[in-house]
Length: 343
Image (cartoon, rainbow, N blue to C red):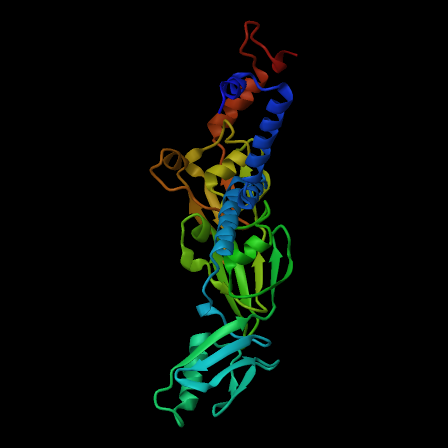
């Protein structure tokens, strides 16, 4: 390189060239923004901090499974699935078979087999058992080459409730992720109803707080074709008595007693903290009464109490404090001595 060339690099870049380089850098940075970052960011916009936290976990789980799909060991074979079946050292038994609309397949020697509703390992064992008459300890392998389209209904407090048509084995968080996550009025449970198999239909209630906040991944149960996933909205609870804003309130996800008092604008002056009670439905004529030591909860000595649908919180009033409050309403405390009573 000549001295002239070296000197030319030391000169300031023209403004247009500098601007172009800056724009290229911005475009490069923008191109590095991953779709998962956008999805995770958009999951936190319900206005309910706990639901936002749930949605972040749901979105993160959905993205993880998109990168590393789940193994299909739990998947139940269904109509229209295409199976690749082979028997070790018996090439004549290797074949591709599509499950018919009734869930059956037909194989040489083994005949007609009901494959619908079985996992691949269960079908392998069933085929091997049927071939025992012809082969000595046959080793059968079943691989799902094409998954059928499976309808799964997602209802309730999700952002996009509808029927989703999916392929492969899905789990609860996968389905909730496809539905866009939870809405702000979502409760803290999810009900998965299995519509196939024996009657009555099986229902599984999943504690979303345990799954998403406490990390109980075993609750991320598999969801199958025809299942209905329902996220009920939170219920309602009532606060009455010595609070500043008594009334009914929406039970959004997990709501505790202290949060409920806060939603009712706090305790009034005449409140008796030691006498607070929660009246809870027990399935019978009389409600269950839960006595609360509010000061003990605030000091951390007693665990805060989670509310349930239709709970009624009653904060009693102190007679003496009510008298004092009434007195100060009419008797002024200023230098003139009289308030309303002097009018």
